[in-house]
Image (tube, rainbow, N blue to C red):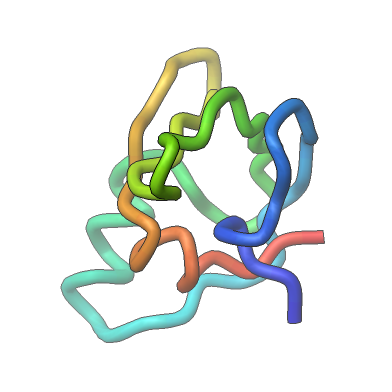
Length: 73
């Protein structure tokens, strides 16, 4: 299983599935990260947390723990 946490800078991937509990999963979906969405990884902080992505035309920073719950291809 490949997650958003493992994707290198400059790569574009598609969301396959969201993992996690109800409230965490809902928060991720509210940010626009739903199944089939294209995600571009812009930057990764020096220590790996947070990760800056571009999704649905806007830039978003997410924690490494949240990125680990997003399965991509």
